[in-house]
Structures are given as structure tokens and as C-alpha cells.
Amino acid sequence: MKIILSLISLIFLISIPIASADIVGKVTYVVDGDTVDINQTRIRFSLVDTPERGEAGYKEAKDFVKSLCLGKSAYVNLDDEQPRKSFGRVIGVITCDNRNVNEMLIINNLAKIRTEYCSVSEFYDESWANPCQECKRK
Image 1: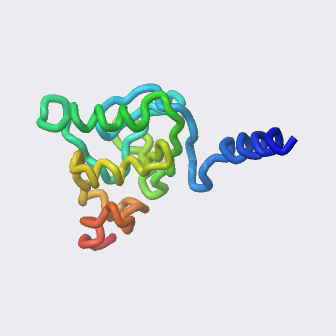
Image 2: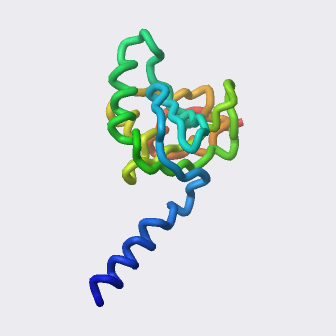
């Protein structure tokens, strides 16, 4: 009986989304190192910029995100100060396997911070977005 109750409790806890998640779903496609599809919604990683197709580091960044996220559940904390970017993409911080993927890209030197967006991002003061802290907010 204790085992059954423990399993029910575990299933309940796993099913509760992270409190800050605005979007919860499965990553079905990795577009590149800083863009994924979740629930048929294209999501751009806030403040993070990875190399574009044809540039050095493109494949490494994309493969890294695939290894962390593809086919797995993800949580997105939308950037409330810039809800949409060009191309109609939603912008946010992505969490896969309980890891902040935006931060992991920076830590692993697969991306850089787009400082021109620091003044319009709610995540400007996160530790992984350190270059933003040197910029002034508008």
C-alpha cells in the first residue's frame, strides 16, 4: 500500500509544472541553437544568440540543444517585456531536464548574450546574462 501511495504522490508531483512556466510541452523540433518548437509554437531563447547556419559553431549549438531537449518535456518562462520577436516567435527562457538551456548555452560557450536586448528583457539581471548587467536599462 505504501508503494502505491508513493507512486501516486510521485506521479502527482511530476505532473505539476514549474511555477514560472508559461508554456509546458514536448520539444518536437530544434530549429537551431536558440530556437525550438514546443506545442506547435516556435520559441526563441531570450537574450541568447547562437551561430547561424553556415557559421562556425552552428552544428555544435544545435546538437547540444537537441541532446538536452528534443523529444523531452520543456517549460518556458516567457519574457514578459518582449513577448514576440521578428518572425512571430515567442521569446523566453527554456528549461529541459530541469536545466536552464539559455544558461547552459552560455556556460558551454555555444552562445553569446545579445546585449542590445538587455534593456527590453526581464531576464537582464539573471546571473547567466552577466553582460546585460553592465548595460543600462531604459
